[in-house]
Image (tube, rainbow, N blue to C red; front, side, top):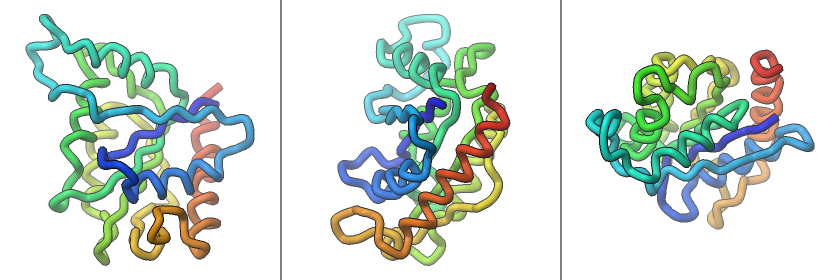
Length: 180
């Protein structure tokens, strides 16, 4: 199975990356994992649907299209989602009738250094995924306190290794219901 990983954080060595690596570690042997780059996507503008589309859009859409399932790991920004992540969702869902996300199972994990662990960001992402027709794994909900889940160097802390890997395993089983 092909899993695309989208990080909502575009900064280097983000907490989202460390958590995503922990989830990916639980995917079955032989899984193909592609880290989908979103930091280079110009802001979506509906005018691009008919003229002068940015060159970065087509390769991104093609990479999304190739994936069987999508793992999204994101921080929460101001009780919502990072602009780069929302932009990526928009870019690959347009133009109308060419939604590359449609039907792809998704896992959403959010993280924060606060006690709320990205819960509002998580639900905001899920709202967009409903609209772009992505069945989303409901349980286990992944609201992660990054200060507890990660070591200072960004690696997964011993107490979170099994939890994150089990989330990856559960997601592979969930995604398998949608992928033939």
